[in-house]
Structures are given as structure tokens and as C-alpha cells.
Length: 128
Image (cartoon, helix red, strand yellow):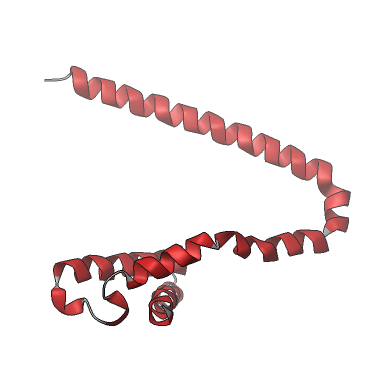
């Protein structure tokens, strides 16, 4: 379990170093997750890689454990909000208005995207 968690964190660290080293405009953990995915795909294809934390369900079991306790990772964010209650009280109406407007804009863009995609799919089915 510890070796599997270490592999997950090592992939995240490698992704972070890669992104910062090349100055890429994307989160390092995303690159690390892609690296972990490539490792798992390679493990399934090449038996020689199925050793250590990649052996059996090691990484999968560790990730299930992390996902089972994912809610604990929101505690620091909640503490941060509680520490800034004075700012929330001062700008609460503006924050709620911005959140409401952004939700409406997101919904409208999502609907427009689905309508455009539906038109493309309908055209593709009517074609030759």
C-alpha cells in the first residue's frame, strides 16, 4: 500500500517537475495522472513491468482508498473559508451574484455546445 501511494505521488511529482521545467500552461498533476495511466497500460501489455507497486491491484487498491477518503481533502478549504468570514460578510452579495451569473452562463454555453454537436451528428447520419 505504501509503495503504491509512493508511486502515485511520484507520478504527480514527475508531472509537476515536467510542467514547471517546460513552462507548460497545464497542471502538473494532470501530466502525472497521464504518466500513471501510461504506466498502468504498459503494465498490462508487458508482463515484466508487473512488479512492485504495479503488481496485482496495488495501485488500484491505493487509489480506491484515496477516493474513499476524498472528502477529508475539503477540510482545509472549509477552514480557509471560515478564517475569511469577514471578507465573506463584506462581499457576500457580490460573490453570490457572480456565482449565479457564472452558473447561468455555463448552462447557456453547455446548451449551445450540445445543440451544435447535435446538428453535426444529425448531418453525419443524413449523409451518404
